[in-house]
Length: 286
Ligand SMILES: [Zn+2]
Image 1 (cartoon, rainbow, N blue to C red):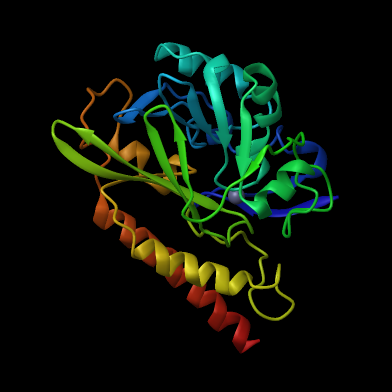
Image 2: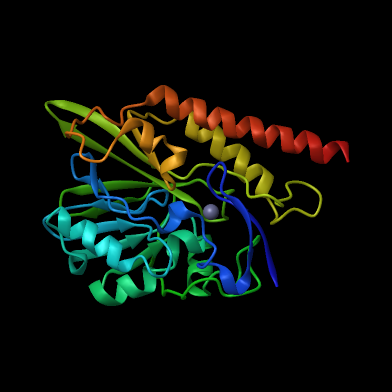
């Protein structure tokens, strides 16, 4: 069974068969990458081009995303290099319920006893292991994980000193979500956004017989609302989406300003919106 094309980052396009999901994954999905501090209590603990974010507090941590199913050890090592334990993760979140970001959730949940929180539409996909995904579904693509709590737009997740606001940013998946928080470094407040970008996987259909009902409106509203966000620092589900490797090199001294890039965020949302509009025009011309 062919699994269709995947193109999660800009250039990562390839054909995968159902049995070769991890064997033929893009290098950036399996290559280790050293942990780094984004700003304040937000850290990157993922892989070269798969983002896993850690937000720490005295009362447990929030972990956003995993990598592929064998990524647990790398995430654990990255957390330990920063002085944190995977067992102390209290809440697990996702940005988009696709297997390259979810496949180790069940294992980490078991190790840490953390609760899995998700938006209603990504919760469904998490609980059936990707089976009901509108685009890549029809088969299980990762180990199902039980969702303990449904989160939705505007909700503030509180854990210790963490206050993390939830945004519904659907389109890439039906339940895609972003998160924001305000941190203070050296007397200055920074608006930090962990953004799920509205990238369109090849083969998605917007209008006639759409990938899922409302997908086109979902993308349009996500772009519109993301452009209105107050952003100083932003990161995204793939390092390549937010210019990780241009902004930061491993070993670089910490500065709260390393990932400050408000114009870059708007420019990237506009670029993706342009691609969406081109696809709409293309669909309408057929
Ligand atoms: Zn995806």
